[in-house]
Length: 243
Image 1 (cartoon, rainbow, N blue to C red):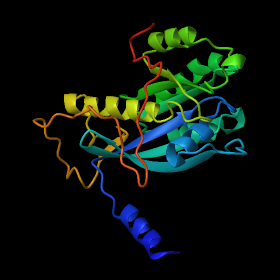
Image 2 (image 1 turned 90 degrees about the vertical axis):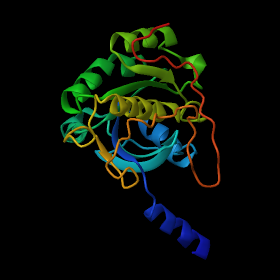
Image 3 (image 1 turned 135 degrees about the vertical axis):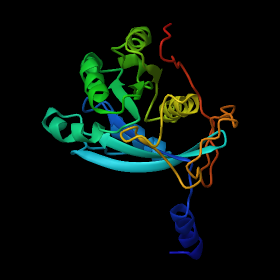
Image 4 (image 1 turned 60 degrees about the horizontal axis):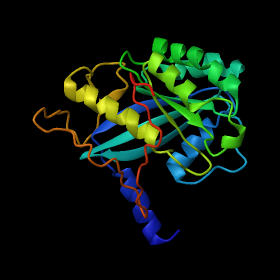
């Protein structure tokens, strides 16, 4: 391995962050959860993806304003036979990415069950983002954007559509959830030191939340080696707002 690769690995190990947040990615099998997460982590489509068995773990550090946030990302299996196993990973989650396939109506019709389980087992301040995946397959659409938007408004979740194939809007759900969680911390509604909150302070925060220092969300960009992305919130519907 070249020396500069060793240096890069060492930098990752020494990486500091302000907050650590736990997310779960849930939804029916075949909705594209793993592909969505893979594109978010690696900035590339995952070829030859297979159904997740049980739970798979990933992580990534993002930047919101001046805050660096490390995301613990738990990708759960959508098959019924794994439900008893995957539900145990819901506990203590601060954010949930709820995924359905816009070309598969059944994956949309079962959303309520997934969301109910998450809210029953995760943090009481759980932030949910609904993602209509495979937006690149418009000709095969079975779930209209307006219908999903209404469901999201009725269930108090954020909503957007994305494509794990093209990468369109893949970053947005993870950043939206983090931003909502940070705002809850700043308002005092969420205490990172409370057990089960799904959030904890990182070394960079030194266990301080400076109320005089406002969180800046003027830029939803993040720091990653060798590339700079712009986040597009295309067709995003915030919680409590419909079309």
